[in-house]
Length: 340
View 1 (spheres, rainbow, N blue to C red):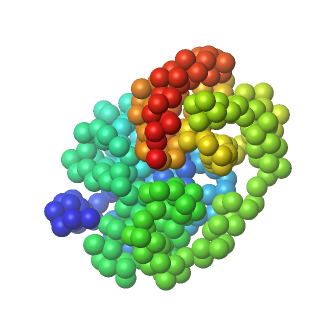
View 2 (cartoon, rainbow, N blue to C red):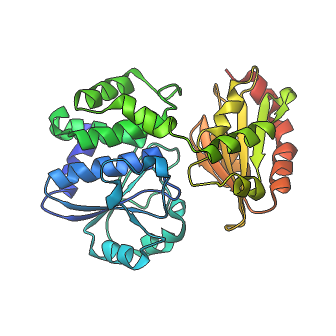
View 3 (spheres, rainbow, N blue to C red):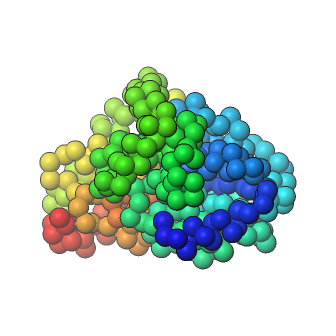
């Protein structure tokens, strides 16, 4: 974090303020970790912060310090409207376009309150008076850690802050294996562990306490996998029937798309997940090397994200979404074969 951005943060946060901290729809570990990490830091500095999520987050994250204080817009719409109305400042974390907050988009877009954006995705929108965007960062949680370090040194870390930020970094880096994990990331993680993060217990809570339904769903996803070796691509899918039969719960499909990248010669992986209630197909895209799934998702699936990890959606039937992929995939054959 450079001195100019830090100075802007410190100016905006002078005095005691009501601060709404907003994460994206379908919050993942980084969204929850970054927002709660910032929540505890601002609370310690005398502010009145509130974390708001557009909808619920996975059960395997509900042990995180302060997670019981998160206000769910879907369940408490009136309360969230009051929080936004009373806020002196609105901080948006782990997303860079208001379309990522689902049904909260109208509420936020109509607000005249000043916005702050902290995010690590590409191509940010310009709704904030202060935008700190750094796609080179492993996660938004790592960015919050750097903000705290620059502002108050590592002495500003408490165990609650460190635990939340570690969880966010761990989940968004695939347990520190994705390319965005840098030496700087590991130095941050070291500071978080020194602040009391119970790192082995966090890994167990997130990855090792899986329900029988999730394991069955993973088996279904692996069974449905299709390999297109000529395009170095593999995809799988889960229908609404698959989800229902396996007692699907929010977060159960997290990480499923990564299994295809373990196949020899595969550089591009996708998973298509049917959502009948929203009448869309949700798509997660992953890649290795320099093949940009961010560009692919933006071009073909109304989405975006990072070079190696992105999300998208398709308004139509599951079979149509897969046909849409197969229609456009041949044009990327050379790019995929050349990817390093």
